[in-house]
Length: 295
Image (cartoon, rainbow, N blue to C red; front, side, top):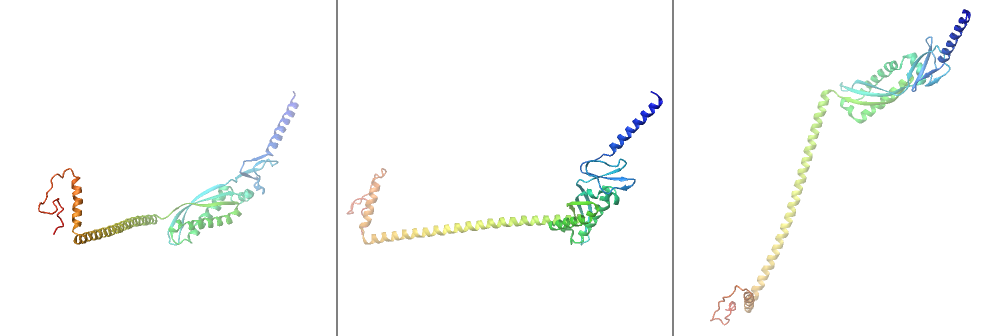
């Protein structure tokens, strides 16, 4: 192979490599959840490139990728209330980059992190402090309605002002609220007093219930004793009435005693231990007990 042929072959190889490089450079693959912004000699191309394979593209473009997936920013701020006390508030903001505005973000602030530091964080802290001006006391931060109002207000402010900056706010969440230490101690003491009051109230209620039970038991015993006394009184009245009638029968009929004596003799005769009887020979009724009732 002569020298001229070698030069031609080298030129062909170089041309093939250049063509291959140029052809491959005309393809741009953008990762999932991202958008790509191309610049040519410092000039930003207005239309971002979506995820996937993009063709054809200028092989000499310089690329900046923007992550358009949802992210969470956490921040802590000191929020003063109307009582001149500062409360520490931990807040989370869920956001994502508007891929259609990636070129605007790159031109105005640079990367996504730059946009967050320049727009989102300062606005969030300023809005939090503004919300504190409407809260009378620091402990009001723990009220549910106060927390809901803060979250809604922050959501509205951040959405309205950041939409034009290419940041879409999805949600605002209050993660933690820490009051000044002396207020926290005062609240703890107040809770302890309330718990002690509840305990004493429960103890008083238990004592009142026991006393009511004792009163009810005493009343029941009193009613039972009253009923028993009435029963005994009626039995005594019946017994007195019986005795009265017996006495009247004895007074009007002496033979009644002799009849009762005869009944007693019948019982005595059935007793195997009764073997000796005392008899009065002077009595017209010689049997024991039969002379009772004689005058």
